[in-house]
Length: 288
Image (cartoon, rainbow, N blue to C red; front, side, top):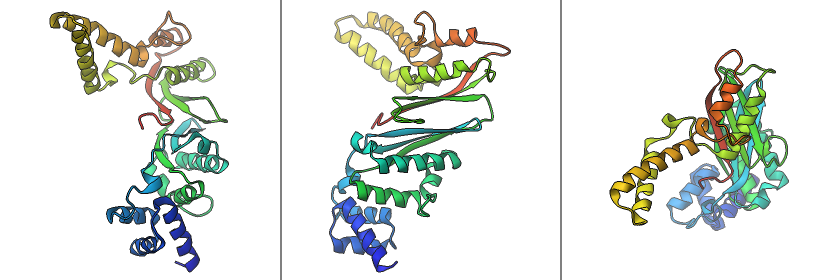
């Protein structure tokens, strides 16, 4: 590594960790110039303490979607503030990552090790961007929908520009005929963005989620003063409502409150039954 490259890396490492020049140089020497490993080295030594930027919460940012030839990729990239999410350098970085994410079919590890247009890997460019902008930035999650079965549809809510926003939903549907009844696909992706279902149907909701909700419902009923035998009966109705409210097929259709999503699928059937095979909804910062 040249003296200039070493000095540049020391500067980046100091920006990220808040550690002094000498310790940063030792860390880089130990890790052969790998900044991510250097951060880990300093933290293990107890030198980085709170690890400055890397320990802060990044819950703002952007979700991007890319579609080509019936295939769709989605990626969430986080920053600490919405101000940075509107920064031109950040947006440019996110756009290039979205393109790479599509090529690597949503494989996050491959994405991180892929080279960007400047010939440097994504993870190295990420460190440079953190040092330049002064905020923690993370590539949080990725996914990919192939075109082997059904048709893919996506919807971007609160779009900053085309295919970039704060909420993105993607849905794979079988049974729709292109240019005949495929407009329903877009409407269902809009419904998913608005209604945030947990699963397609009851079988898709994890048992521990239902058990936990049932526990909360029963405790709430008993704490209201009702006897335990009554709580058992009431909780059955409430858990049934919880399942209906959180499963896509049983949700009330956002465009007609008199119908469920399952009704819409039946109404739009042409040659074959319409089936929702899978879906995904990314909301910036959700769960962080």
